[in-house]
Length: 174
Ligand SMILES: Nc1ncnc2c1ncn2[C@@H]1O[C@H](COP(=O)(O)OP(=O)(O)OP(=O)(O)O)[C@@H](O)[C@H]1O
Ligand SMILES: O=C(O)C1=C[C@@H](O)[C@@H](O)[C@H](O)C1
Ligand SMILES: [Mg+2]
Image (cartoon, rainbow, N blue to C red; front, side):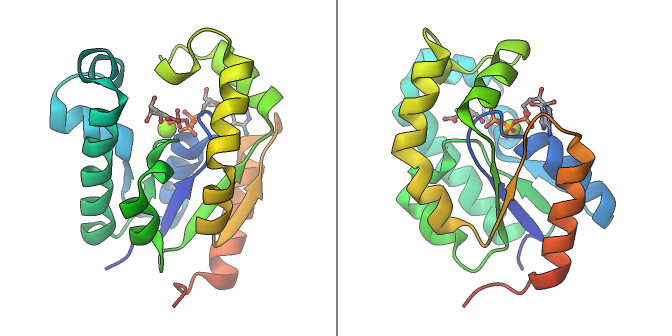
Protein backbone atom coordinates (compact mmCIF):
# COMPACT_ATOMS: atom_id res chain seq x y z
CA UNK A 1 0.00 0.00 0.00
CA UNK A 2 1.27 3.46 -0.83
CA UNK A 3 0.00 6.97 -0.39
CA UNK A 4 -1.22 8.61 -3.61
CA UNK A 5 0.96 11.63 -2.82
CA UNK A 6 3.19 12.67 0.08
CA UNK A 7 3.79 16.41 0.47
CA UNK A 8 7.03 17.76 1.90
CA UNK A 9 8.54 21.23 2.19
CA UNK A 10 9.33 24.14 4.42
CA UNK A 11 6.93 25.33 7.15
CA UNK A 12 4.14 27.33 5.52
CA UNK A 13 4.83 25.99 2.01
CA UNK A 14 1.20 24.88 1.78
CA UNK A 15 1.55 21.13 2.34
CA UNK A 16 -1.61 20.95 4.48
CA UNK A 17 -3.69 23.28 2.35
CA UNK A 18 -2.63 21.88 -1.04
CA UNK A 19 -2.65 18.27 0.24
CA UNK A 20 -6.26 18.54 1.38
CA UNK A 21 -7.37 20.01 -1.97
CA UNK A 22 -5.46 17.38 -3.96
CA UNK A 23 -7.13 14.63 -1.90
CA UNK A 24 -10.53 16.18 -2.60
CA UNK A 25 -9.75 16.30 -6.32
CA UNK A 26 -8.62 12.65 -6.30
CA UNK A 27 -11.63 11.61 -4.18
CA UNK A 28 -9.45 10.03 -1.51
CA UNK A 29 -8.74 10.53 2.20
CA UNK A 30 -6.31 13.13 3.50
CA UNK A 31 -4.03 12.88 6.52
CA UNK A 32 -1.57 15.36 7.97
CA UNK A 33 1.21 14.16 10.24
CA UNK A 34 0.82 17.21 12.50
CA UNK A 35 -2.86 16.35 13.04
CA UNK A 36 -2.00 12.68 13.65
CA UNK A 37 0.53 13.73 16.30
CA UNK A 38 -1.98 16.00 18.06
CA UNK A 39 -4.57 13.18 18.02
CA UNK A 40 -2.11 10.58 19.32
CA UNK A 41 -0.74 12.83 22.08
CA UNK A 42 -3.92 14.67 23.03
CA UNK A 43 -2.00 17.98 23.18
CA UNK A 44 -0.88 20.66 20.79
CA UNK A 45 2.39 20.67 18.88
CA UNK A 46 3.43 23.82 20.75
CA UNK A 47 2.82 21.97 24.06
CA UNK A 48 4.90 18.98 22.96
CA UNK A 49 7.77 21.33 22.04
CA UNK A 50 7.55 23.31 25.29
CA UNK A 51 6.94 20.32 27.63
CA UNK A 52 9.19 17.67 26.08
CA UNK A 53 11.45 19.49 23.60
CA UNK A 54 12.11 19.14 19.89
CA UNK A 55 14.00 15.82 20.18
CA UNK A 56 10.95 14.08 21.68
CA UNK A 57 8.68 15.75 19.12
CA UNK A 58 10.85 14.34 16.31
CA UNK A 59 10.64 10.82 17.80
CA UNK A 60 6.85 10.99 17.94
CA UNK A 61 6.75 12.46 14.44
CA UNK A 62 8.98 9.74 12.97
CA UNK A 63 6.76 7.00 14.50
CA UNK A 64 3.56 8.59 13.24
CA UNK A 65 4.98 9.13 9.74
CA UNK A 66 6.34 5.56 9.54
CA UNK A 67 2.92 4.15 10.37
CA UNK A 68 1.13 6.40 7.90
CA UNK A 69 3.56 5.53 5.09
CA UNK A 70 2.87 1.84 5.72
CA UNK A 71 -0.89 1.94 6.27
CA UNK A 72 -2.37 4.89 4.45
CA UNK A 73 -3.34 4.98 0.78
CA UNK A 74 -4.66 8.54 0.50
CA UNK A 75 -2.84 11.89 0.35
CA UNK A 76 -0.43 12.51 3.21
CA UNK A 77 1.11 15.85 4.19
CA UNK A 78 4.13 15.86 6.46
CA UNK A 79 5.23 18.46 8.99
CA UNK A 80 8.01 20.69 7.67
CA UNK A 81 10.70 19.06 9.81
CA UNK A 82 9.74 15.42 9.25
CA UNK A 83 12.55 15.18 6.68
CA UNK A 84 15.10 15.58 9.51
CA UNK A 85 14.63 11.94 10.58
CA UNK A 86 16.82 9.52 8.68
CA UNK A 87 14.21 6.78 9.14
CA UNK A 88 11.63 9.01 7.43
CA UNK A 89 13.98 9.82 4.55
CA UNK A 90 14.47 6.07 4.00
CA UNK A 91 10.75 5.31 4.36
CA UNK A 92 9.88 7.95 1.76
CA UNK A 93 11.80 6.11 -0.96
CA UNK A 94 9.38 4.58 -3.44
CA UNK A 95 6.54 6.97 -2.54
CA UNK A 96 5.21 9.69 -4.84
CA UNK A 97 6.79 12.53 -2.89
CA UNK A 98 5.88 16.09 -3.93
CA UNK A 99 8.00 19.03 -2.75
CA UNK A 100 6.21 22.37 -2.58
CA UNK A 101 8.93 24.94 -3.10
CA UNK A 102 8.34 28.50 -1.90
CA UNK A 103 10.94 31.23 -1.39
CA UNK A 104 11.81 32.34 2.12
CA UNK A 105 10.38 35.87 1.81
CA UNK A 106 6.95 34.45 0.94
CA UNK A 107 7.21 31.83 3.70
CA UNK A 108 7.97 34.51 6.28
CA UNK A 109 5.09 36.64 4.99
CA UNK A 110 2.70 33.68 5.37
CA UNK A 111 4.03 32.83 8.83
CA UNK A 112 3.46 36.38 10.03
CA UNK A 113 -0.13 36.31 8.74
CA UNK A 114 -0.93 32.89 10.22
CA UNK A 115 -2.34 32.17 13.67
CA UNK A 116 -0.61 28.75 13.72
CA UNK A 117 2.09 28.65 16.41
CA UNK A 118 5.37 27.50 14.81
CA UNK A 119 7.83 27.24 17.71
CA UNK A 120 10.86 26.96 15.41
CA UNK A 121 10.18 30.39 13.91
CA UNK A 122 10.04 32.20 17.25
CA UNK A 123 12.28 35.27 17.60
CA UNK A 124 13.48 36.44 14.18
CA UNK A 125 11.32 34.47 11.68
CA UNK A 126 13.42 35.48 8.63
CA UNK A 127 16.69 34.36 10.23
CA UNK A 128 15.08 31.20 11.58
CA UNK A 129 13.60 30.37 8.16
CA UNK A 130 17.01 30.78 6.48
CA UNK A 131 18.60 28.49 9.09
CA UNK A 132 15.91 25.81 8.63
CA UNK A 133 16.32 26.07 4.85
CA UNK A 134 20.07 25.52 4.92
CA UNK A 135 19.66 22.50 7.19
CA UNK A 136 16.88 20.86 5.16
CA UNK A 137 16.92 21.93 1.54
CA UNK A 138 19.17 19.19 0.18
CA UNK A 139 17.09 16.54 1.92
CA UNK A 140 13.83 17.89 0.52
CA UNK A 141 15.26 17.86 -2.99
CA UNK A 142 16.71 14.37 -2.64
CA UNK A 143 13.40 12.96 -1.41
CA UNK A 144 11.22 14.65 -4.03
CA UNK A 145 9.92 12.81 -7.07
CA UNK A 146 8.15 16.01 -8.17
CA UNK A 147 8.77 19.66 -7.28
CA UNK A 148 6.08 22.31 -7.61
CA UNK A 149 6.82 25.98 -7.05
CA UNK A 150 4.31 28.17 -5.28
CA UNK A 151 4.19 31.91 -4.66
CA UNK A 152 1.38 34.23 -3.62
CA UNK A 153 -0.67 33.19 -6.66
CA UNK A 154 -3.86 31.12 -6.48
CA UNK A 155 -3.54 27.86 -4.59
CA UNK A 156 -5.65 26.18 -7.30
CA UNK A 157 -2.76 26.67 -9.74
CA UNK A 158 -0.53 24.65 -7.42
CA UNK A 159 -3.19 21.97 -7.04
CA UNK A 160 -3.63 21.72 -10.81
CA UNK A 161 0.13 21.41 -11.32
CA UNK A 162 0.36 18.64 -8.72
CA UNK A 163 -2.50 16.73 -10.34
CA UNK A 164 -0.82 17.06 -13.73
CA UNK A 165 2.47 15.74 -12.36
CA UNK A 166 0.84 12.85 -10.53
CA UNK A 167 -1.08 11.88 -13.65
CA UNK A 168 2.05 12.14 -15.76
CA UNK A 169 4.27 10.01 -13.60
CA UNK A 170 2.79 8.65 -10.42
CA UNK A 171 4.63 5.32 -10.59
CA UNK A 172 6.66 4.86 -7.41
CA UNK A 173 10.40 5.01 -7.94
CA UNK A 174 12.34 1.74 -7.50
N1 LIG B 1 -0.50 29.27 -2.92
C1 LIG B 1 -0.72 29.94 -1.78
N2 LIG B 1 -0.87 31.27 -1.80
C2 LIG B 1 -1.05 31.95 -0.68
N3 LIG B 1 -1.15 31.40 0.57
C3 LIG B 1 -1.03 30.10 0.64
C4 LIG B 1 -0.80 29.28 -0.51
N4 LIG B 1 -0.68 28.00 -0.10
C5 LIG B 1 -0.83 28.03 1.24
N5 LIG B 1 -1.05 29.27 1.68
C6 LIG B 1 -1.26 29.72 3.05
O1 LIG B 1 -0.04 29.58 3.73
C7 LIG B 1 -0.28 29.20 5.07
C8 LIG B 1 0.49 27.94 5.39
O2 LIG B 1 -0.08 26.86 4.66
P1 LIG B 1 -0.06 25.39 5.28
O3 LIG B 1 -0.54 25.37 6.69
O4 LIG B 1 -0.76 24.51 4.30
O5 LIG B 1 1.52 25.12 5.29
P2 LIG B 1 2.30 23.80 5.67
O6 LIG B 1 3.27 23.57 4.56
O7 LIG B 1 1.35 22.71 5.98
O8 LIG B 1 3.15 24.23 6.97
P3 LIG B 1 3.66 23.34 8.23
O9 LIG B 1 4.97 22.74 7.85
O10 LIG B 1 3.85 24.35 9.32
O11 LIG B 1 2.62 22.32 8.53
C9 LIG B 1 -1.79 29.04 5.23
O12 LIG B 1 -2.32 30.22 5.81
C10 LIG B 1 -2.25 28.86 3.81
O13 LIG B 1 -3.57 29.33 3.61
O1 LIG C 1 9.18 22.83 10.14
C1 LIG C 1 9.05 22.30 11.27
O2 LIG C 1 10.01 21.86 11.91
C2 LIG C 1 7.69 22.18 11.84
C3 LIG C 1 6.60 22.34 11.03
C4 LIG C 1 5.24 22.10 11.49
O3 LIG C 1 4.54 21.41 10.47
C5 LIG C 1 5.18 21.31 12.79
O4 LIG C 1 5.49 19.94 12.57
C6 LIG C 1 6.14 21.87 13.79
O5 LIG C 1 5.74 23.19 14.10
C7 LIG C 1 7.59 21.85 13.28
MG1 LIG D 1 1.02 21.56 7.66
